[in-house]
Amino acid sequence: MVFWFLPLVVAVSALALAWPEGFLWAKPQINLMLAVIMFGMGMTLRAEDFVGVWRQRRLLVVGTCAQYLIMPLLAWVISLVLGLPLMALIGMVILGSTPGGTASNIICYLARGNVALSVTLTLCSTLISPLMTPLLIELYAGERIEIPFWSIMGNVAMVALAPVLVGALLKQLFPRQLERVNRGLPLLSMAMLVFIIGVIIAMNREPILAFPGLILLAVVLHNTLGLTLGYGAGVLFRANEADRRALAIEVGMQNSGLAASLGATFFQPLAALPGAIFSLWHNLSGLSLASWWRARDKRTSERA
Image 1 (tube, rainbow, N blue to C red):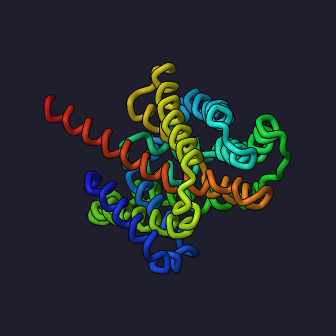
Image 2 (image 1 turned 30 degrees about the vertical axis):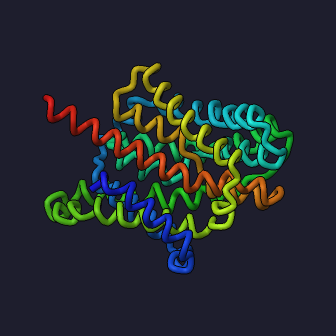
């Protein structure tokens, strides 16, 4: 089913651009749908998975450091090399300085990565974002802003952490009773994710249709290099394949909604554009990478 995912996302994306009204009504329900998806992921986890993350806590340090070292530096360098306007450069730096987003957990799940590690890394990077995000924006862009910490933490807790923990707990307490439910959750999760991407595209229709070529190129390079270097960090620290995938996705995928919001709130509309475009692109690239990894896993298992 995952192999049909990308063509379906492209079709829904095109529909959202042509008929945004068909998706915008669901904007207030995005967090609820994300929570349902995260609950489904929690149903695939066990308490031992989180214990395993604690035992490999060096990867939490590696992933969090990579998030805040690699992505803002990449954003700044790419912007300078491409000669982006000042407000676009600031928008790129904001994007690079944000924590990981909930979408990264979903993509990690589809990519057969370590979901427990992914969720924990999202939580860790979010916890220190009130310190790191303004510090990095001031360092690279010379601008001071304030981060709405409690609203971000509340969102992560309600959308990502709590549903995953509840799902994992129910799986632990009622494994047999929930076995049939668990079979249908992946399909429901994928359908919801496709629809959420459509809603995000409908919300950002104008900047996407404006097609700012250089900013699009900057976003693509930023995301691609982030994924690559995140995976490379896993190789460097001798992580297993599932952990490498989690690190790649956590580093390469940002909280683009927060980036767009900060850019629009504190600066000019152009500063929100990188975050808006990233919302579309990192879902497409993440789904493509997840599909490629799953196809590679299938070929490996067939040869074994």
